[in-house]
Image 1 (tube, helix red, strand yellow):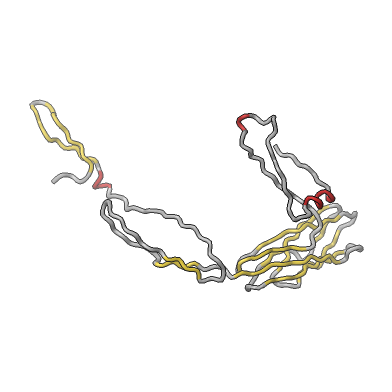
Image 2: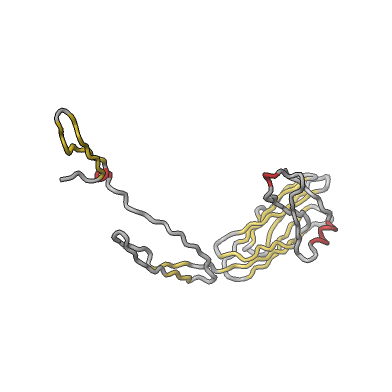
Length: 224
């Protein structure tokens, strides 16, 4: 079951005055005994005017996209053009939009850093709105040098007899510009046995008068 609890802008501003909103969700007395574990999830959504798109830090060569909504609350079509930025690292998804009356259009901005520096810019949205002919939105992000992993040796080759052990050392290095986070997963691989050597073989080991008295069943190579 999903339930929504609307909060007006004034109350939300009071709740988020310290830049944090703390919410507690708990089962009530009507929950059945087989639902003793609290499995509630919470999604906090706030649709309000934005004055900044902060993309945060991003490794060089990667991209991050954020989306804003352009609302037309009037009775005439909203012609939005041109749309652009003053910083090439920030790219809008469209250079013009046509927003019908009382509807909303989505506009995405993609951040793609090319160097390890901080980026700031401005998204400019011009339209035929007589009250706000040009709306602006600040843009911010930073580029990071990515970590570069190295491993030595590149592979291990080892042959052991049964019940033998051996220790090998793998050296990892990071020649990049930022810390490297990693995890290790060990997978073993064994050579499949030759099916011809593992086929069951039956042979007679003893005869008695008029009947078969003993049969040996072995798995492996045939006896010489």
